[in-house]
Length: 296
Image (cartoon, rainbow, N blue to C red; front, top):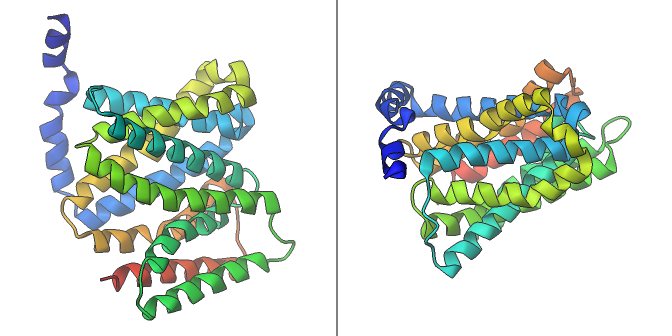
């Protein structure tokens, strides 16, 4: 009875109609752009915290707090079959690995460059999953972008580039596993459980890298902010946008992510990029827009 009584008094339930009306007043493209901005500014803010808790520690706090918020909101059932649990576990493991690799990358190379390299993952899924000759153009354009990034003065930290490439591979895997998750779960329950599993996977890395620093109040507060900006807010905005616009339009808007990441790195972190790096980012963005816009 106590659980049922608590369930009837959940404070956020009275806020849901107001939140829904607020979302409804915002055009879907703006929701997507706000989500992208929140995600990348959150990543820039997270990079500032690396000195306090390390890259792996910040990832761990982000996933832990995001999982807690999503579990409280969705209260998913644990009565799932074995196949569904395996899909959730795979989703969580890929999610954790993707974020750990990305944060290790941005610890070594500029945020905009890291996200651009990482973006090759989903772009490859879109291009190589197609049999149309036009998609060869987008693959070549993306390759030119990567070539230009590799020719910047002074070069890029090879370890950072390696982590960004690994994050891209995991992002491509994340898309494929995420499709399975959508088939086996409903609403946000799969996301909540997958996020929780990802937090468990990341926890040993965070403890090993940061130890008791993770429990310091300033670090915990900062971790909560990163979780809200980089996970809870973007996912919520994107889910609402997807209800109202075609996936192809959504994909075109998401293609702006590398450029937004570069701007966030410049404005928040002071990471100025060369003209060649901006051209490289533009090539990858155009390749992504093209492959998504003209997809069948």
